[in-house]
Image 1 (cartoon, rainbow, N blue to C red):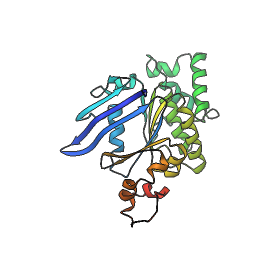
Image 2 (cartoon, rainbow, N blue to C red):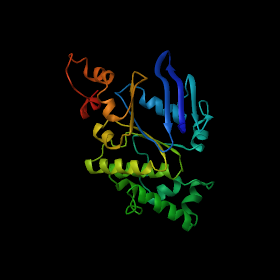
Image 3 (spheres, one colour):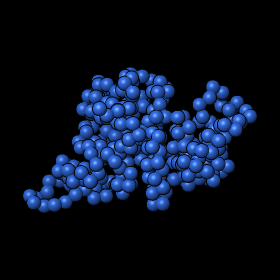
Image 4 (cartoon, rainbow, N blue to C red):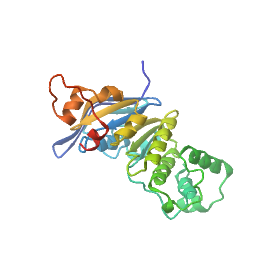
Length: 262
């Protein structure tokens, strides 16, 4: 029997009678890297919102390690080990990379005391270790506002990692990145999946090809198809949904731009 760290069963979200999400089931294994794709309005963001508690499901059950989190607060869900990185980086641009990361470490201190208290070696070593995993080891003393867009995305990932999550929810990490940054981000996420379960929402299909092990396709709030990328891109339902019905005998598949422009 597979070891699922997260499950969602018969989950629905409706807003004023509009069914925004209707997921029959979704299972995430320990240390799995899952990519969720689909056009705008497919329900991707709503799905991430219910997993972190920002939005509450109208019905259904979501569990983490067998614990029902469906009605839990965002704070309690975070304490259970779900961390989320949103699409737009939200870092303290006037502080250094180090200080941004220092603020993220679990502590009972106030922000003021955290910034100005004597910093012990264990904390510094932890920050340096996470910085090395996110490509920021040489940027710790730079002001965060001077980082490139890609580096700010990595800092946001580092901040989430410092909160010691077991499950990472990452929203469009490759958006706005250079090709080199995108490739480096993909390698980073694959390495992080050795210690974390990860769900990535993404539109860049080349990036999806780089990192995808299993792909879940959402359409109109429902789970349309799920499987390896090479299977998904050749699935009749996906092709018809994104490209329109093809002629009998015609061979085709989903190309990198097909999802991005949908």
